[in-house]
Image (cartoon, rainbow over all chains, first blue to last red; front, side):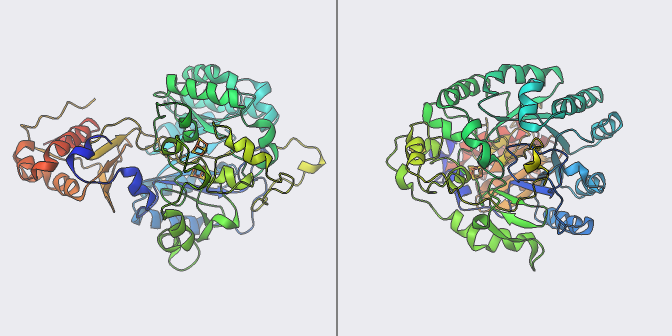
Length: 413
Length: 88
Ligand code: SF4
Ligand code: SF4
């Protein structure tokens, strides 16, 4: 964004994004709460289908609307979206209506035949969720059999020639040490690695204390990203780590919630961010008159999120420009004030703030669709979902005198 | 990789690209290579849309106010590198 300064008094793009856009850039759309797995950190507490989920026709009509709004692609997730019997039909419908799809899956339905058909389809991206480079580490979080299922899916995609599919990893205390192994694994299948931040959202709240990377691991992660940033997608999700150094990670580096990012959940509720499934961040429902567009443009919640924020307790911090106080959802679900430091603040202010917070009564999570078998001792696991403004920062890389080209990932935060 | 911008030649917006108006200018999306670009000024959007009316990029830029010209030339080079604009 350097050249604009000498050229024209155009405010930085990031500043303009804060005021909101005509339509989201990074729209996540969950098609079902149903899932074959029960991942311990599932950010949408998925498991069981919700009886009120959007029907095939309703999904089609939202796709029509997104086409009209020129939302060029969506990140489809769940639950496990492919358990919907109409999944492939809806995928084709979206693509035929100029709404490209990247879908996140645990691999369940990616047979050889399906992989071949996907490889022959334009405008579709596949993202396989995997949270360990070894069966042991992965299955501890995602459940028994999930590693083998993901590997089979990757083999099928690679054999079908679908190059460049994504392998998406949520970084935890258990797998930060496997970063190089993940990169090698992605290489082996001709895939691209994507790593994202664990947030205390959904069932993630129950395991966050134990699974979120330690301060030492955060530094390791930052250093690794600086060394491998070009090749690895992050959904722009580690911008709070920018406070560690003078080299900002590639990306937009702002919380995009309600500004460039949002979520449509399986029952049509619109939330500010996929990691913020809670009434406090619910802006409306696509079934109400005016549909998604009215919610995106007119909701009071989004208007509020688009107003300039004060840095609150962070405003005196020398790193505020780079870090922006971190992730709204991470703060909210750990009970921290939204205008203060991130729970993983690299200056240690999050730890201090957490110590002063009553952690025994965390804010309640939103709709819980977990399998009811969980309390009976089944492993609790499920697919984590895509993330947001998500994936690469639209801004990664290019030096634009007014235009900025971005690689094929999307995302924010 | 597309050839670098040759300002002596005429260019046009690629037929695979859609522009979405935004407060800052426009979002450009290329359905072929799935890249997203931000056109950060309304004047730049105008220039890109009208590009095919000119015999060369040079000529198109001649009509741009001086304070924008260098930045817009660089923007066009970025757009050409992403195949968003193509020689005609
Ligand atoms: S920073 Fe957190 S709340 Fe904001 S868009 Fe990213 S994940 Fe959502
Ligand atoms: S105090 Fe706030 S701005 Fe500073 S590093 Fe911590 S979270 Fe970021």
